[in-house]
Length: 267
Image (cartoon, rainbow, N blue to C red; front, side):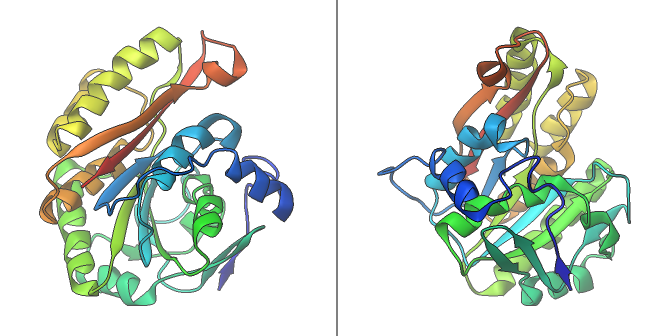
């Protein structure tokens, strides 16, 4: 099955040439590229989150496959949904699903359900793809979206994904898609997001899950990020680096109602 674009013309340009140019302005040139175990990237309209996402994608060696884990904003489909076969289309290319890795995840992690419905209109993974097609026409994806999960389910899913990565036999990056605080002031976003970012940089999945709930931080992808942290730790991650942080206020000029964006690389 081919999953067609749901948010082209809304979150990013629908014309191939304009989309290429849009992504190009967010790319950092001549930056050293390093291998990563996992990344955290935002998923808003590219005009807002593109500079943060672009800084992350510019700084990593591209893998053969990205395992994308995002939040389920639509409420459609299963609780933890994997699209295990087919391809995703955006204006600048068609991206294949890595069926070797996706089948292994679906087979070996009981929490995961094969489900297409959850992916049809979800933007959190789609907005990553313009960066993929900019850097590589060969990179494949494994799309997973999560509606809810307990901390124990996050651990089980993360460790299961780590095993699938280990068994793949080639370079795979786990990518958690998340924006940070929503619709608070710039100052509040920076303060609250700083607490969540500190837990990510400390490679503390339980700490992240706990602080987001305790402090009521409106980080929409904290569960995918918690899963990615468990996976990265299981794969031997030793450090994490904040590549870039910003808020929508820096683009819109509205500093009273912002959304925060953080780009992080785990190695």
